[in-house]
Image (cartoon, rainbow, N blue to C red; front, top):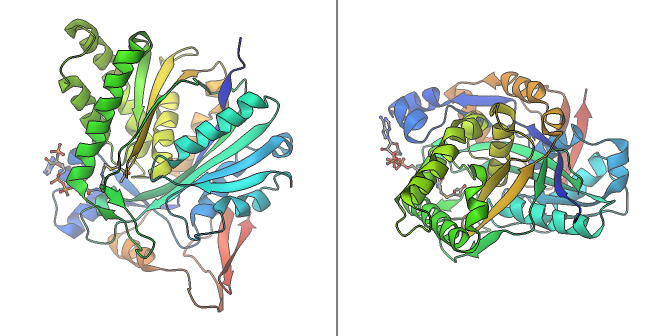
Length: 399
Ligand code: CAA
């Protein structure tokens, strides 16, 4: 039998501050239910200048790596669409901060929110050929649309770190998957623009369209495997998007399943949706990390899921590339994913008001060649961006 490969360890790290959607709705003169029900978000993570993607990613990865892991990691792959450098990869900083063995390679991957799935697939393929080695995958993003824009309530930030190995404790990934590319302008960010360009309504339609095209292909090629999926997780730019995707599959005519079979399958997936969206509701869009945050959410909150259950992961990146992955929950998933630590990390965050959110949002890293000490408004433990000197970023660790 082939060696199982997949996610051996997994961690989440969030900015310290968040904004209640109620606070945002009041400030923008919108009914709060539009945000909490209409788009399905409760809170929005707000990163400070110290909490850039490298700091978020390093803090996520630090939680899961042992000295033995650091010696076995051959690649550090960073997936993001919030990169601050066209050339130097964010993973080069992570490699140093976490003292990964020197002969590892480090690089960034990009394709909007799909990037972390590409990284995960690269990592799994590498480990399948070298089962005694490991790969560290980090996905970290800051979703920024701008103040008082249509996309503002779907901002967020955070990081997920995943250690990929043979005989994983949490989740083994199948080699088979279904992917698709469709060149479109639903959401994109030209190099000269600080903020994303987005055609909001079209983006949600395209997401649903691509999900149904993938499901149609899956029905045609692997109907039995599809029927066995206990739950379906989604890239969640806002949690209502997952419900919209489920609805689009429900409405799809010409299924290979009869009505009873399809209803049973959809009802099972729907029964897990709230658990899979619980963490995302408290954070907002984390771009590359959103799908994997949803997987963590499902695994820690869905009490009746067990080892051997198969889960679908629908990864969507605007532009657009999508992939449906299938994986199997492993024996050690509950021990490896420490629910109490994750919940405590979420609960330890601090709410801020709209004025403070706007002030933090407008802070920027200096772009001249001066030496600037970065002084954020918080003193939380962990890695943080400490200094920018002649366009070079330097990080420190605070106990
Ligand atoms: N009570 C309950 N619901 C209410 C309400 C109220 N008082 N008022 C409005 N709503 C509902 C609306 O009926 C609507 O529901 P449906 O979508 O089910 O019809 C929902 O709230 C949103 O209302 P609008 O469509 O009027 O909202 P909007 O015009 O402000 O746009 C948005 C919403 C398109 C998501 C916008 O926030 C946006 O552009 N976000 C960024 C783009 C995005 O996230 N796209 C997702 C797909 S692309 C992707 O996945 C990649 C990625 O990460 C970006």
